[in-house]
Image (tube, rainbow, N blue to C red; front, side):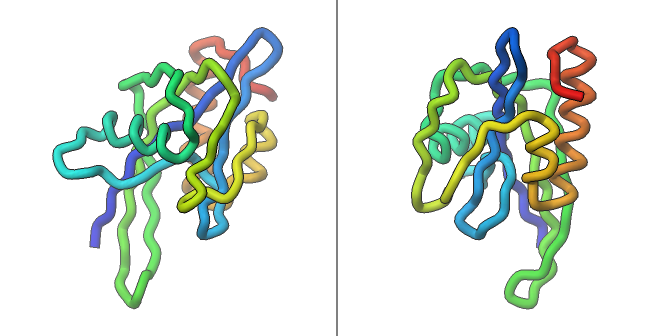
Length: 144
């Protein structure tokens, strides 16, 4: 079975540094905010809605391009799931987070290096590495 989700890599940047928001999903893993589309929703609309629902952050600028994709598979209830998650970049104005308690148990603003260590799954780390290459190309200072 194929499964598709959309999310945002939240970025807070100032003159001193660039931080990324990770959330700890109720299942226990650390990743970026994401979720499934509602009927008729575009990928970008889904990413925005899920981000606002899970983090309470509504003051942000999301880039429609580029997007970053991760692919992975797992077995759930005896069925093989092929999952694709497409992420957009979201530049937030404030680091204040209000978590959606039903889906999220924790969050952390981290440097690139700290976030790479905190992210649970390898596919998510690989996608995040692509984000860093893109941001470095834009001359946005992102750690070492």
